[in-house]
Amino acid sequence: MPAVPNVPAGAPLQVILERAHRVPDLDHFPGVDEINTRLDALAAKHPDLVTRRRIGTSRLGDPITMYSIGDGPDQALMYAGVHPNEPIGFWTAIHLAEELCADPDLRASCRWNIIGCIDPDGTRLNEGWFDGPFNRVHYSAHFHRPAPAEQVEWSFPFQYKDAYFDRVMPETLALMRVIDELKPVVAVSLHNTELGGVYYYVTAELDGFVEELHAIAASFGLPLDLGEAETPAVRQLGPAVFEMISAQANYDYAEKLGVPTPDQSGDSSAAYAGRHGTISLVAELPYWTHPSADDQSETDASYGKLLDDAADELDGNLQAMNEIFEQARPYLSDDSQLVRGIAAFLPYLLRRPERDRRRAAEVDANRPATVAEAFGLPDTNRMYRLRFGGMLLRAIEGEIARGSASAALHPPARRMRALYSDWQDEAATLDAQLRTIPIKDLVGVQYAAALALLDAVRRRAD
Image 1 (tube, rainbow, N blue to C red):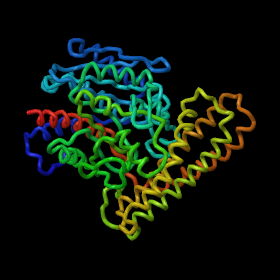
Image 2 (image 1 turned 135 degrees about the vertical axis):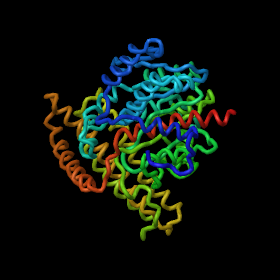
Image 3 (image 1 turned 90 degrees about the vertical axis):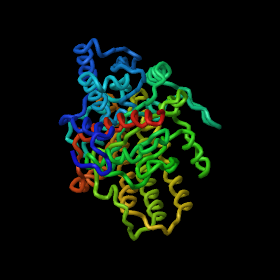
Image 4 (image 1 turned 90 degrees about the horizontal axis):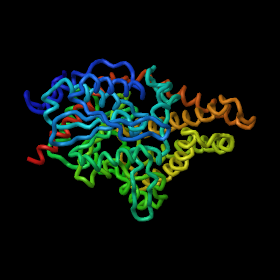
């Protein structure tokens, strides 16, 4: 394990890092069946340690199960698959369960309640890339992101000003019931990003915790993501550490800019758990990193101009996809998760360029952009067109593959294939600059961050 500055031998964080660096080599991401098989086998092997309980059923009929291990008295909650295109957490949940069964000291510290996959339906639509090859072209071609209202993370009840959301899915309801029952002291919602560096969200400021999160990433040799924040509505607690994203803050920010306020989804699991005093954490880990991710040196470009240019490029990408979707929409099946996702995301994303243009007018137009920002802004556009272009093409190709597609669907299919092929070729040119991070290191960071959160919350209580 690399030496980490300012972490004394024997300190709680050092012990946590030693545990985290014992994650074994991993060469793929587990799908729904493998997650269930591994956790069920653990429960069968350790019936005296593991309590297995079905907590719900997915919309397409998959059981959702929770595994509880440890002595307490505190309850902690960890759940994976809230965004089913983010599978690092599947291994993190499995590894925590295995370590709890193997280590009585870890078990004695808390009773962990682990949900290995809260959205089986969405996860199965991502399994095409879980075995690799792990490059952006293959990943995005098999990518699925549920519509905002169908994401477990963002489908909790929400009422604020003119916003109202109560279309709670069975998967979300299962998680709500568990949160209300356990009233956990900490909750870890397992997410990950795509490319760049490590960053975190937490619902409370905890003494020393920002520095500990930095040390965890450093111990695995991973850069922090010091570029553009995921959303400008969040408050920064430290470099690459933010207060948890909230639906209310996003609403207020959109209202302030004079753009349409969000109306397609609800609140987060962290906001719901907060009613019980739960402190929640999200550790965002990338599959790939780039030398520019944490480069804070200045460029010759102004930040305002970069925002404007990125907004124009994104607008062009989205308009092209939207034209194809509008042409194809009458011939696509309404019961497809992919179609529902595209139908929800395109109108939402089409608002973003105008939001960024208005934001560019507010910032210091002459401030030099950092290298991290100059890389991150156009790469966000690259991510959007690869992800959602891939989903749109999958939706169209899937309809054609059924064998009953109208002849009118073939022209937009040809146009989308050509457009997406160009985007894939452009993305492939960046591959040589990217480093694929070992899966075990990604799991190690999430695992260490979860244990460090529990320790930080207990320090505050003492």
